[in-house]
Length: 363
Ligand code: ACO
Image 1 (cartoon, helix red, strand yellow):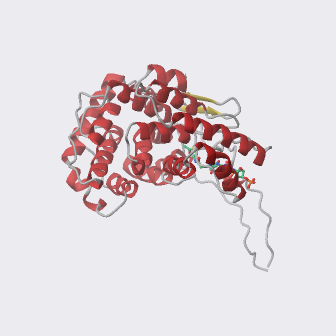
Image 2: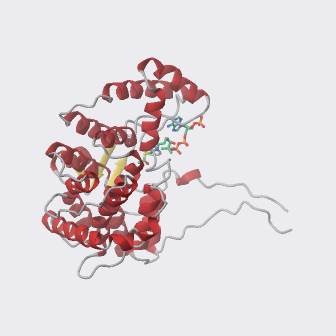
């Protein structure tokens, strides 16, 4: 028997998998364009409904406006609330992250509503209900007159948020709604390419998002900040973690070779919160030293702050429990998943790559 050498690029680095009009990540320049606009501009000028309308329009070629998306999502939130007992039936005893997976899998087509609106509208209702279930409180009915981000906070906290808090979560939703061929979006496109329906697409994409190398990082970011604890421990803690070959959560990215542009957008959103964030200066010092230490450790592999670092601080400031950070990320990213699924089904073929066999060969 003989073995064959492999030539496959590990992790498919730098291999374009699809053509897309939805988003463009320029890792060398630190630039993210979503459906024709830079992320910083969108976060300052657009709502989640507005950017979702852009994505769905670009994906399907059928123009849809912000007001239409807003109405459809409000309707979907209300219909989801009516079905909550069925959707949360299989979530008993599960963590919030796992409960959301089970509830998404139980979604179904709603009469007179597009599948994408039914799914995007459903997720914050499910997340709100599971967060409140975990703290022993009743689910709160959605308010379709509120924006999607404001209503997400209202369903989590049981009261309408301040305009500043609603704007901060809206800026977060816009910032993370789509991001090129990340792992969960690629998963979505693979499933969509088989012509499976959008409910299957989003269940699979959500599962891919939950891993700590993708959307599961913000909770560990807060755990890291908690573990460091005080300014005098920043250097020794980070040096010791790197010496143990641990990864610093919220740093590094497969594509960006400079600072993730979304990190700056979120940092600005945090700074706009008038309450001020007690932990922000401390987090800033951790960030500064972590970047320095990572540069020393891997001088040839630029490792800079990624979106998850400031996501953790922003969501914590909005009093979202850390166990719900990944589901809240999904609440926004589902706009991208549904758009990519539609684009794939409209313009793509079955995704079926090949593999390089490196096992034994018969004599
Ligand atoms: N801390 C310390 N070292 C790191 C980090 C980090 N955060 N990220 C990469 N490295 C090191 C690796 O250990 C490796 O070092 P080595 O060559 O000495 O073994 C080198 O940098 C290259 O790492 P790769 O694994 O090739 O980087 P990859 O592109 O596969 O990983 C990833 C990207 C997964 C994001 C990585 O940087 C990481 O694990 N970061 C921490 C988790 C995180 O923040 N995840 C959120 C990502 S953003 C998002 O998905 C929305």
